[in-house]
Image (cartoon, rainbow, N blue to C red; front, side, top):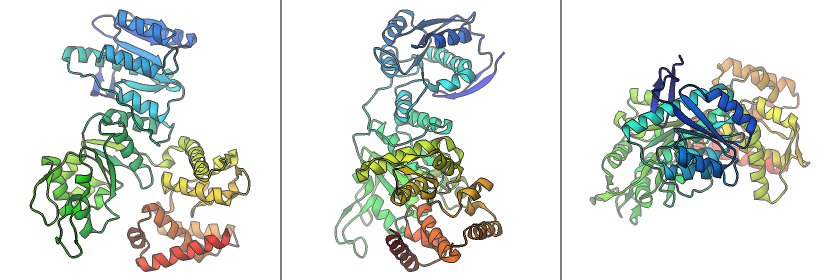
Length: 496
């Protein structure tokens, strides 16, 4: 007896005896690889499950229409039409059909589109030897529950914009699947993760794959706007509402009607503004600052934070009722140091992006350069990786990227190998020792100027180039920060 708990489109499904089905069920396998078909058929066929196989998508669709199988397991790379097209035809013919797509190379777009179109799951072939029966049994049980409940409705497919989320790791595959699942609804989504992990890209992908994709997507960094101006930015203001309000201003909620509003760093939002956001979510109404007219809006909210909002609620710095309104669906983006498998792919993507912008051939990655990139902990996550590769492209004197061309932060590659803990997570005395060790290994390094320069750059990276927050993080005034930035720019120009 196999007992599992599977988290899918229907929530958590407990499967007590995955082979004890009341009646024989039919599974259809569609794949060009006959060896795979033989192996999968052997794994899935039992007294309660018969397995049919086809080698082409048109034959697979004909068999589906004749046999009406409870589950279809189809490869993406099929002929004469793709597995995605097969999924679309099957779902159009039978909206309740359970389809699992497989691929040796699942791209971001294909995973998200498959989940949005109603696929039960998208599984890379390298994972099938470990969980083929588990995911198949969960899909069969879900099919049985759908038939008895008769509650699942067909999902419409819409042509979508391209996104720029990159990743092949299992952690990012789960993010792609979640984006595909939530995109078709209007539920509020909370995206969590460290600074620089790519929260805005995920929010944009949710919008691009939603029915609102032909409407506005607006992003606001709640930490970058002064507290006294944030309310006006979101809701607008009437002429004369406050000093300097010379004209009426339309806020983001009006501009974004029928679209998606992304509220980044929502944990920084003051309580007064939180109350008005809650009213919009509950009633769809608001008033401009200084105005009495009640305005209506239909906006989907996607928010992001790198704070622990549960702790902020406990400290009463974030409203509990608003937290539950926003936290309907949560998508967590793991830090880059936890998905090393993505670093090479991201590096190649950023180098190509830089080449497209500068109209030059992309730099080629050497294996030594990849090892350096993969050994560094990336406390600034994907944003730091992109910025590093931009600087490396400027410093490189050849058409290949060498380790000497990679200007990493305060942790050298050797330090990262010895200790992968970011400096800001180390005990203070230990972090100081790491800095002195780096200076000892490079006698030409002027320690204090180097520390000032690198910490200034790192503070700007970690705050998304927000000078107010960066200055606060460094314990200096904004004017002092500006002087440091100007001095760093002058140094970089001299070095070039």
